[in-house]
Image (cartoon, rainbow, N blue to C red; front, side, top):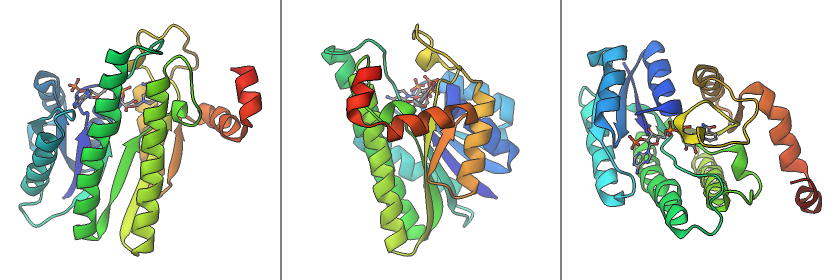
Length: 245
Ligand SMILES: NC(=O)c1ccc[n+]([C@@H]2O[C@H](COP(=O)([O-])OP(=O)(O)OC[C@H]3O[C@@H](n4cnc5c(N)ncnc54)[C@H](OP(=O)(O)O)[C@@H]3O)[C@@H](O)[C@H]2O)c1
């Protein structure tokens, strides 16, 4: 049986990945703070297919211990962890200069992300095989003034994963690394954002993301309609970016 671990599995894109992975024949280790939400999802996908562990990624050392014990539990029959998806993430629009939001965003998206990504790198290095996936954002390609720390934290995740891909490639290990860059997806994270457009359903975003992961792609923008926009944002020179945004 294939095993996967989803960090931030209690709602939104993480929940979508749990359901998709179970349909694809994985047994999934789910982590987040809201255990009752994970129980609801486990009821939906079947008890035999999902293991639940409470995890707060801002308590970085504890979170790493939870990750390691969950991986051992899933692999106790001699199997390996085939995929780790780090979907846990927070952010608020219109948060420039708000230290409380800035700190919280950094604690989850930078420190928490790194705590788990490092543990996953260590695991895959030992296994010599696996797939590491992180949820970055189109907002991580260039700085967005409405939510600077969210934007910067998503840029951090993108660069971390780029380096991880290079690291595994140099060592000739069979570990693929994928960064998912969603446009707007219909989840709790964006429900207070007043300036949304092209909002896409979770299932569609997850289906396209999964397909990119399995093809071993590094850079996967979801959904397809966001690809052209992401491409333009990436190529736009900074002087023009400051003029149009
Ligand atoms: N939705 C979008 O339009 C969009 C666009 C671009 C990128 N993304 C990225 O996609 C990822 C998933 O977000 P989403 O849209 O699915 O939002 P969501 O429904 O709010 O899901 C966020 C997940 O992160 C978990 N989380 C938050 N704080 C945590 C903590 N301290 N410790 C452990 N888990 C924590 C939440 O679980 P608990 O609260 O139960 O802990 C939840 O499962 C994020 O990284 C986000 O930046 C989303």
